[in-house]
Image (cartoon, rainbow, N blue to C red):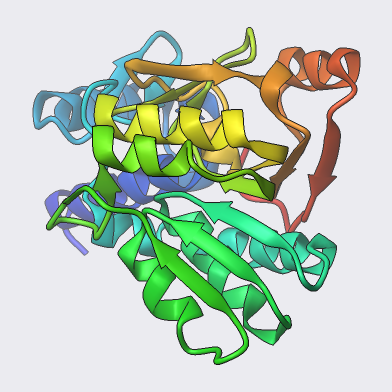
Length: 264
């Protein structure tokens, strides 16, 4: 393989690793590809110039705090981790429960994992979740009204929030786009955030489902804090500051770890 072709291949894999893990250090990438740190710096600078990554001191991360990854890509990124998370959540959801389920690729997998349950009542602003759960004749599925986003089947806005405020359910299952070190929860879209806030207000128990890439990931609109969450389900142990906060707050932490950890 020519040097140019090897560079193109390596840079494509770097982007995939950052998407999988949220952040990659220069040193870890150099070890992974068995190249010099100078080579990796050139790669990261080129990828950042193309808008494919954001360059940070010591490494690179996801490209933007104001725009989320395209939805079809989000569905397949960390898919195996999302499946593990979903199975763990479903195992802890009792029969005959009432649920809110919000927008997100991880919450979609939770919906699919719940298909073996009986007698669930589900209120959702996610058309994909509604479609999945309507496969069971044993579920009552209520779709919140509002504006449908063509890109992902999400329903958002004032009407959606008002409908959520009419219910009081056993469990609210939510996904987020970012969790800061201080425990703040973030997303990219204001209309989506007000719907997630309504779920938090009106659920007796709030279950947060998120893969490890959301820890420390930048997003612009604040949803709330970990203090409003009853349980966190993820695929790898959180970074130390977030783990310490979870312990202080007494939040249940459930980690569905892989058999082989990803590149650090």
